[in-house]
Length: 183
Image 1 (cartoon, rainbow, N blue to C red):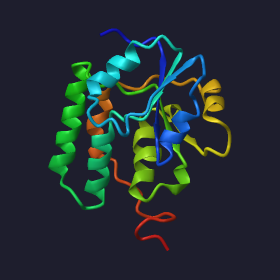
Image 2 (image 1 turned 135 degrees about the vertical axis):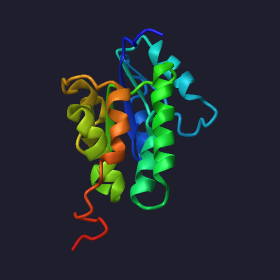
Image 3 (image 1 turned 90 degrees about the horizontal axis):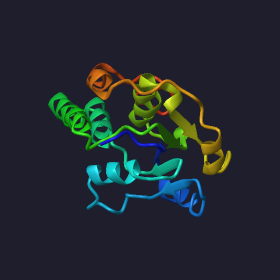
């Protein structure tokens, strides 16, 4: 499968459906929400986004979602290292088979409202791989269409097989506002 010609954004957060819906009707954006389409496979999402002719493709299917959940659960002591490593291996393999593709940008809705370890996943672990590719966004600041018009230039993501296995060593900061152990 050839590389997509579109810039792809994945919107994550509680209000992702509304944020993506705000893009309806824009000529240069193709958008969809997969939150309620549980039967859509990751490979189908990759095919959909790769074949778009729009300059921007926006959706809410996080290709790293299972790794994110496993990482958060591991560091919140709700899961095991083996589960996290299994999820990482599955994503690395799926990317190699072109069944998953990391988006060009992640738009993290209302980052201040993220609880504990989730904040560290998005603004720490994922952002560490390519800081300008993870965009914290408060919906009240500007319309999502405005954010798309002003995307920062950034180096590309490193190869998934090179950085994703290292997330097992990325320990969240346990001292900060709203985190366990905070004063």
